[in-house]
Image 1: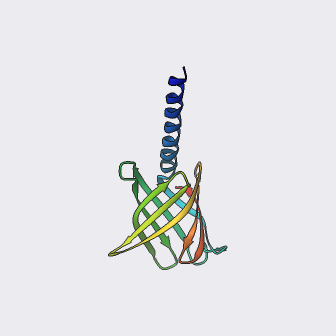
Image 2: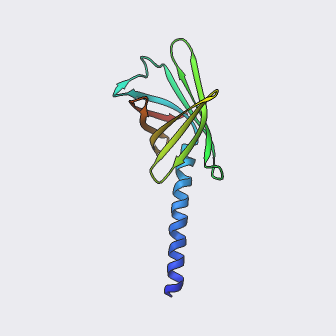
Image 3: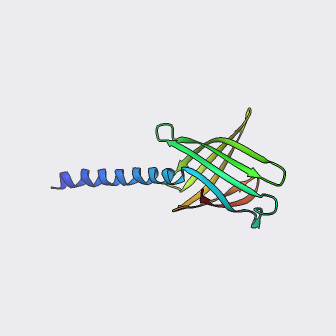
Length: 136
């Protein structure tokens, strides 16, 4: 009995961890509209920014990445940056790699998805950034 129970338990744990990883990136996929963007505690949305949209395209489990873009809006123009994203489900983090011509920039965010609400918390150029968004 023990010979069957131990492998069955190990298989159950493996499947559970695999589905958690899949669940996080599946929850992240889609279009999001920011409801709040804070830099070091100061709200930017409505002052420096008039809008921010984020798009997480389908995640490839084989490549461990998906395509990403975010569009910043102000009173003058919209500016879009794009690249790829990687999900670390174990630590509930997303790595965003923005590609701009020959340069690339990597941003790491703690991520929380609660239904149709998304929170990203991280550091960009020494500033603490918190983005709250709703599924668009």
